[in-house]
Image (cartoon, rainbow, N blue to C red):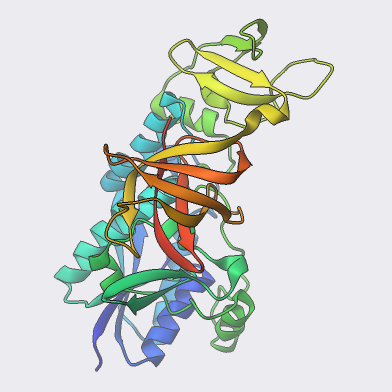
Length: 356
């Protein structure tokens, strides 16, 4: 039997094919699903969500078909503390977080990484679309060959130690190739749709989740124009994110967008779309991958949201550990709490969290 690896199996087609390819490569595979929450704990009634019994059974079915052992690990307490509580705190501070990044950083590549070590596994295998290579003595994270499925943006927080013990078998495959492999192997999830939403807020109503889960009601307040004049009322500032146009409840002659939120004053400021554009942002909590640290200005390509095309910019170091990004062209709706990830070609230089 070959070297032992732990396969993170979500019940979806990608992780299932990653398990198949790992076994085919001669690894001694153990399949695991992370049970992160109970649907009833977060007020979800739908059966088809991340961590649902259906997902567990799909993963178990694939593991059985591959002839590999399969377990379910419960990390609900860690998920609440490291992901859900952070998500709520970020929204209440006026930021718009990306909980999938926290889940990768704190659960999949930390707690599960520890569990893999305890089981004597040399690596974790996931179904992410990305590649890992060694260059000049450092592990580097690269985009997937299938650019339409590339997930390097949400993986920027991987450390050198983690990159040394992570495998991404799908990095050089297209989604259609992955589904074809699953179909040939007779996997029950070969045509299963990809998950699109935040797993614990599948309906996308973040404000309702905050009120339901935290047991809070968020007070109404003033909507202001750019001059500071009151032009309307909102039903809680947590209901809005930068760049939002719909749901403002305003009857104006021209469309307006959320430009700022002041959570202390409980105000939401709106303005025309051109007010959303800015060339500069600051980021903290940086993780560097292709370099040890940023010691001087560096030309990069930066993206400030998952589906955005990278934009040319210059990254400047700051003595307090933050970095300043100056884009060549103004960017729309730079949003605190989101990740900014820096690239050099198809290689991830590093990334961090956009500051308020």
